[in-house]
Image (cartoon, rainbow, N blue to C red; front, side, top):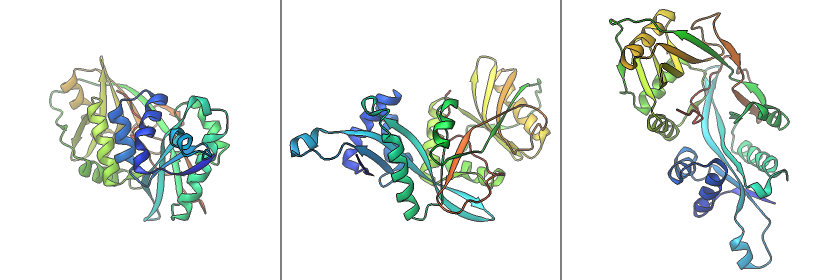
Length: 291
């Protein structure tokens, strides 16, 4: 098996593989490869070169992995990292250890470039064990809070006016030890959230990102300077959406609504060198949210 970085000329074949595995649109698959990760940050696996050139040309990639550039602050210093996303193996190549080999190759290559950690979000609970066997550990947990939202005509907030640059600044303010995307990565995530129907509510003392389904607002992110500031954001969103309930995804270490909610696993991290403390770290809206 050959493991290496993908050349831009191979993105057509990788787009087809991505769509085959995940069922996404061609536009989304290309955006992930070309913008969210970008050339130089996409790895592939393919069968070893065939003896005849024609056969080699016909042999497409059998696995793909995007290593999206991210950073994470530790003791005030930014640590370079990568967010593994879109890990896809062709059905015919599964159960052959192909993805395990691709993960190891990518980690070794990234470590050689000075990358200090790799993080990811397992697609389902059953995959936490898979990644633990490959050097990852659980981190960046979540607390899921469900609340009724009271009617308050006087609740004031703004909606849908946050740019990617503004969102990055808000993240840096409220989650200084959070996993942070580059400008291109943040633009891709925010564009995907908006296209999926997300709304952003913000005020001077906090902000939230949410989807509406029936009478429920699902907040994939909520930061505020205290419980009352958070409640005002919820109340303003209720007045706009006429939705009476909220399901809120908080980082495990956030101090909003303490004593409420259900703890859940969310992200994982693998250190590519000496480990460092991420117990206060935050990760969310990693291109993993659905409307």
